[in-house]
Image (cartoon, rainbow, N blue to C red):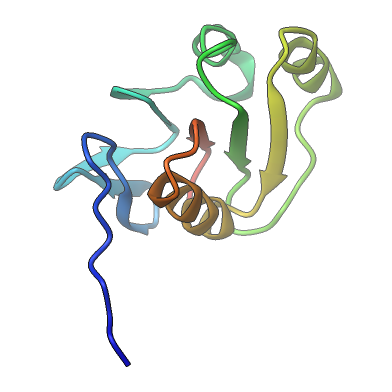
Length: 117
């Protein structure tokens, strides 16, 4: 079997995670964090929709990692994001990290907002 190294270009995949942190681009970032094209920034969680709404038109799908277990996001937040034209998928954070990395490796326009690991 031949293994091929994935080239993410300028995009930053998630390299690892643990209780309360995510490792992106060789640096540790405290949760919650938003990883989007061109930047990794602290995120204020469900009460901070602004940074997520700014992604409208820049990405095709936004993954929201809800922590160790999948959980629904507040309905008002989902409505705001969908009204802005963002496709939203919620899942456990570990799954969101893996899914984000796979789609990123395919060159897709994705972002992920992570509450915790």
